[in-house]
Length: 348
Length: 129
Image (cartoon, chains in turn orange, green):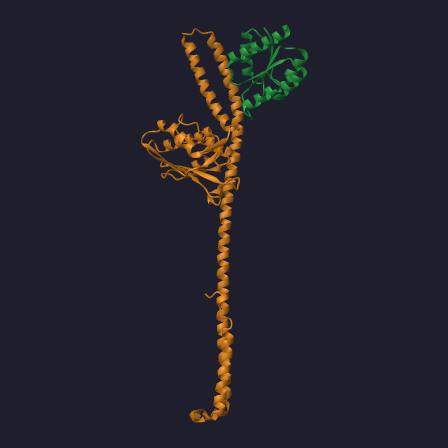
């Protein structure tokens, strides 16, 4: 394949011109230089020979020129087609990428709307449940007051009150998910916050689980330290459960450049700088069905009584409150990675 | 002993609170929504009103703002279990509209009775002064 710019477009004309010139020279040589002696065999055709040579030469030159031009035109066409093919492929892959990212955004938005709807529903349930609990507590307290403090009835009613306390705690967790609490936001150092959360968590984690923290220095965000602690605690506790008490958790904090492809996953595009917090475990991983429901409140794969199913929905809600994004990558038998993108800011 | 108007749409809570207030020797008049409470206030003059916030027909928020306009001296206690907003959001709003105290359900009834006594005592002092 010859690129059109490098093709010698003058070549066919040179061939035709050169051929015609040679033919004329031949004609002139045969006609004027008495070479009959060498052409005795062609004697009967002698008078036509020079013209025949001229015609033959001209025809051959034109034919050669035409063939060369056809080859050149064909090369040009092939080059053009190849170029079009490359452009088309590029356009197709760009469209495919755009379509994929649109689909991901749609799923994320749908997930957000779904969580919002569940939040509203949970808020309503919490209101009714608080009324129910209040009635139970009120009646039990009144009945208990009439009983002898050493009686079994008095003690049993005390247990009822204890149970209602647990119900109350559950409701406050549901409300924490459903309502937008007004948390104080300030400039915080992400690495210091992670280290503080790890120091809180480490005493509760089995010695057979190792935690590695790899960090890029100088990452600051505008956020609430307690909420970021909660994010880490909830994800790490899930990781420990998924590893059944043995394995490695790797936490990585990194700066992201503004053109990082990961930023295409943001549901709200923002031109500012982002940082990435990755938390990976070597646990049993999740299947697709679990991954799709993982942020739904009350969805849990843990045994009854072991998990409220609110941990990751609270994580999701906190990250959204921090104008960030949380991405999940998991494979059955190959562990799980949560990638959190958060807007970065200048340090205090 | 005081005359208390209790506005609460949940039957169980209303009956329980009625018993609690009776035991503390108060006279209790019940309404199950804001409209019933407004009708009652046109006929009677209670010493204090305890009202829920999220109720059908007329909400506690509307009731408080109307009552404070028509009966500025009536002491109001707002109670709420939350809902579309968080309970503290509603309760903050109710206090800014004129409720003297607010409680988030489930309430510690001893604290509620103490608040009622304090408010009524304060009122009595105001009258005596």
